[in-house]
Length: 165
Image (cartoon, rainbow, N blue to C red; front, side, top):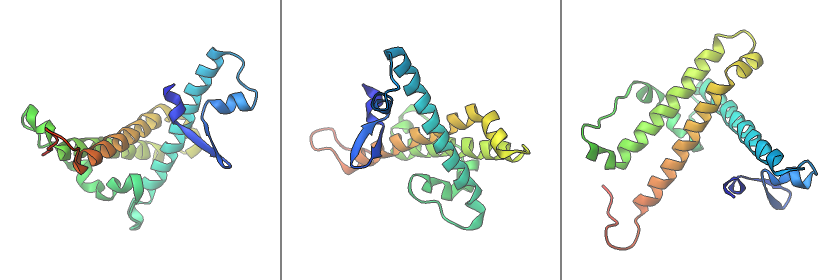
């Protein structure tokens, strides 16, 4: 099952998210489990969104973002950049793909942060903007997947036809 790849660490055992309902005696039917797994994913995405909002709030402090949010360290460039892609073949350049995903994730996070500052109560604002926040978190997760994929491709794959520009 694809959802089994999302795991949490409970003590020394890795328990797939979704299975914790089983272990805590909360799963009574497969439709319940499917709804729970979808809900779990939303909860996890909202946690990612909170982390992104915290990262955005610290950008002006001089503290450099690290790890999966390090791309936000070049936020000025990402907010203003336009794709240099002129032809379809340009999308074969990993740098063009990566910059597009970074710009998209950064812009979505900044837009959410700006919308949150317009609301008086941050918690109510978070609930009101939850759909946008989930979309920003998804964009961030997609960026991570694409960047790790490109990283592996650039390491080289043995065999014919393994060269990447």
